[in-house]
Image (cartoon, rainbow, N blue to C red):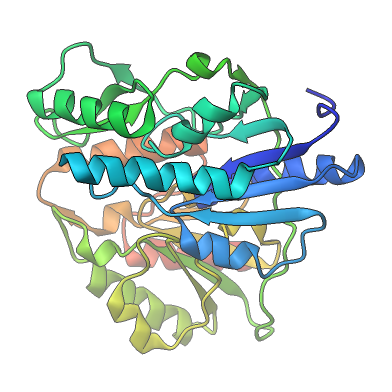
Length: 348
């Protein structure tokens, strides 16, 4: 799609921090046409707080909390959830002419579809799905999911599906809500993101790495994270390498990292938005952000093989997941010494 529909406001639902670069790309194109943009951030308050602090011309930003968590299960909680969704819709869209609507993912999020259902009556809907998450939709659900389907249908007016993914072992599965975008007449669009547009905070003139953490010290079925990471951070300091911390925008970071007094990048801002040309490596356990920067050509290092897992199948699963999302561009050192060898190799 080369040009936006003329007249009205372009609405962008940002459902996760990873969507920000794609939202910026839409904003840039809208700015060239002097078209107003409305960004609605779902759930991730840290991203909303970051966006409202940066200059975006002719862009209005709203935050909508995840009103369906916890899941409303009683009649009055269902009525309250529906009224809250309706109230947010009225406060944001009453009297507003909408030219078109963008969103980025059909899974997990059950709030955005409520708005899409109502907006699709008068505006075209576009899906720029950059996640490409595999899903196997199930036609037979456990009773608890059938009940959940009914509650979601009553709260949002949308008929959802459920898909599941095996996580690490054949007995451990995660069920996700999903929906068919065609019920809103949505068209799938390939969209190039706008990355590397923000400078890193000023630091010393030493080489630097970015360490990404998603509160991984609480990861179940895995041990050794705190000891491994603490040793690596001490090793970086001994080698005169600066470290920037980057925490997950929604779940935050591991508590023990606070004692290192390291500078942090804004949690609500995706790492891909920063110009990382001065960074020698990005390091994490497993992260979609790590995969994203690897695909952008930066040195990306996973600590997956430095941890102890209660089942080797879990490591195998995450290795496959990271390879898939990074196009096989992430490095997997087997020891702390190999991590340092990778870093030293980059600096030489």
